[in-house]
Image (cartoon, rainbow, N blue to C red; front, side):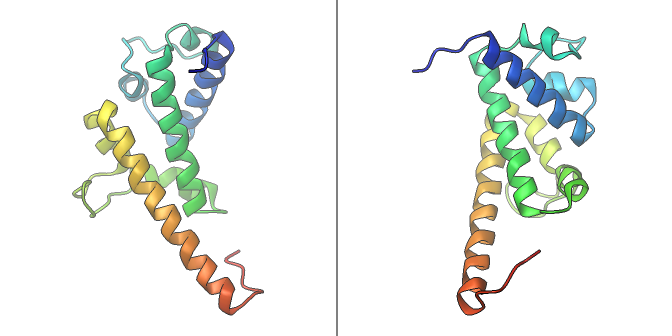
Length: 141
């Protein structure tokens, strides 16, 4: 297993704060995502002091969710950021949005949301590959 150092925690803190800013998360939502006490540290250096390997794992899941939303909604960045707030009728969300679903139990639901989005990205990639097979000049953008 790779040893984590302070630089990893600082990079994780900076990434987390950027993503949650793009998503419009409140301080309470940010604290809940990382299982942190309030008041929520707002600077990357302050937050890095609270990040351990378990929290860095959560940040990794959040980064994956962020990246998958970007892939699904490229090139509209604002659309990708808004999708975290849009209701989803499919299981396991049952009409809740991604953020609400994740916040209900971040430890478990971060992985579930990430897996669900990864399947969506794979399905979209296969669909685009089929279109390119029949039209080599096809571009979704």
